[in-house]
Image (cartoon, rainbow, N blue to C red; front, side):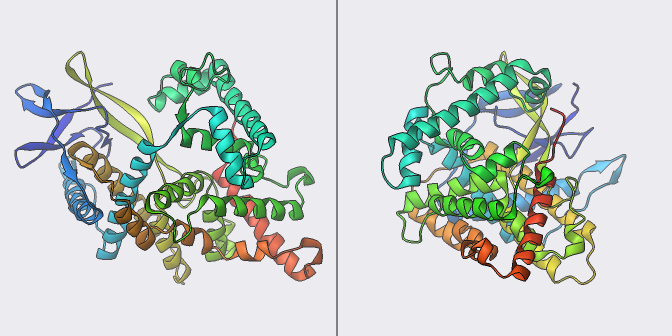
Length: 439
């Protein structure tokens, strides 16, 4: 694939590179550890990167405000066929939320880097004790069996299905390495110890009933095989599980950080709290319009330009990259939509897409030019409590309290019907998030 590269300089350095044929193709620099240098005839790789070190949340927030401004300037300066094509602008309140989202993104990356390496059995013991409150051999064996089943599911798919291998290539992943990493026979596996968040992924998909149904595309009442009473009971179990993941207010600083991110991994993937927020905020006719193409449901994944070093030279390729959802910005849009009597979906969809583009580009540029270096977990906890409180995010969905107190058969029939309607809406929205597909 040919790329036509132009540069954006800043203070004598190359700040950003853009493909002039596809100017909204965001550049992901994560494979580069050397400076980009402009030479006659094109770009070359220079000396090893000397990234700016950021050591506090306050400094990181300020840095991201500057990156947001720079990104908007770059995007608004892009021309196609000689004329300006784009117009990006955000209000001060939106800039604040976007900067906080970017701070959170960097903290999430820190969480992934710090994730404890565990064997499958070690993780099973850890999770069995976490969920039951004490060491539990039988529960440990059950979790281990479910993790093994999940690994076999992944391994068999990747090993035997060309369409999955093609999809992994699009994501920039080597299918052979991926297959070895998920081999359920740990003697043949490429890595017996894996980061905790990898095991979490299998736990969420194979150990929790409602999220397992999501994974299997079976969170539905088709065939009348999932009574409302059973859905309520599964939601109660899910809520109990989430409350064990989430930190309490007095949690030790580092533990508070890690537990907040444990929940974020789950919710950004499964989106159960977000679905319940949609039901609470949106009107009936609006909910009925939600399909897999709806802007509030569609995952944000886009092609990115990836420069990398090959045999000492600069090379390029393009892959598809997924960016996790914008929790607090989504919440803000939902509140605005709820109070908008002349609801125009397009303007909210455009705003959310603009947030996502600015966020993605600012994140990638920061990762190339700077790094966050801090073990001040008190500072990190302070930011999370103030700006990204995951326990409050979960608890703000009022239906959890209603479900927790429900005994289905003893509930007033009219109220039971009301809850059944909300559960049906949940199943419908879930189908938009986790739709059935051929492969």
